[in-house]
Picture 1 (spheres, rainbow, N blue to C red):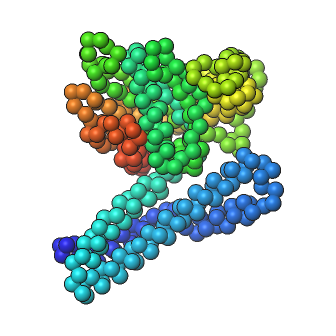
Picture 2 (picture 1 turned 180 degrees about the vertical axis):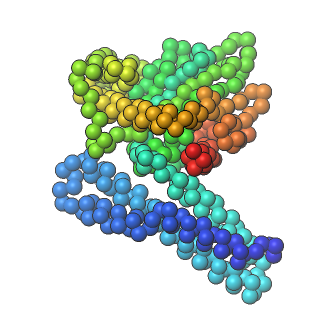
Picture 3 (picture 1 turned 90 degrees about the horizontal axis):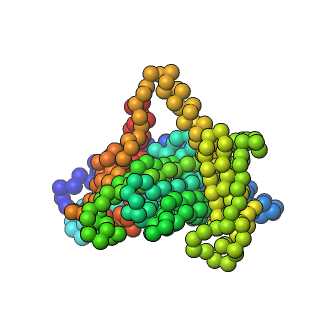
Length: 370
């Protein structure tokens, strides 16, 4: 215990917290809380439930953000007092407690530091995540379903609200594709580092000869559009098809033509929704996702033009960004950040915090170097 230079460590903690406070702009957060609190207290707030939910969610996020920063400052103050008292009394138990608290605060600061890196144009938005099976047949469809469960479990661990909007089931097992929303601030900035091609290597449970199989699935993450985005889609550019929902469902899901498929004719983008109760609700949900994809496409085209003008032809993301190996050994490794974990089962159960944090730091460094 005596080897720990507590004064130096505490100075380092205060310096890191000061950097976080500067980047986060604490005064701006307080101003946002005051404004949102006033809006949340309006007597007619719930006349528009969607807007009310947006206001209360934003207020809760801002309050939590400020509370995390304030509490960290208090914990550092308490740690300094504990170290002083333990040093004066030669209390080894208190020094051990201080050592443990130092480690805990350092970890929490590191996590909060990651949040400050979510400063991209759309990072503060909610997210729409789509998973599609790729090469690998039934194993790929099963892998797509495994990834869906992994992300929903990750969201559950974080206390995020999710809503599955569409699932297309494969014939033998698994999913052809699935789309879900994460209705939390900064969900896009957080989850966008998961976009790319994922690879699974395992002994196939669908192969009666027990051979090793490699399969692939693609993950797409787009920001959910807001009413201020103004993505207008002319009616003559949109084809609307209605059909009966497929797969498992409750009352009315499979008995009426409530499912909706939208096709944006100029780009070929297709969005299907079938999990709402009515055709009107499915169409509205599909339109939100369609507008989100067109918004992202527009931004990608603008970024591509900027890169072309700058003479930069390097790709930002590789075709394969992460491997999940279940045989002959267990390991999940991100090929961009080199972050790896030996417990593949835990990762597939939603324990991907380390991969997400490493991805956010990797992306921030790439943006800085660009």
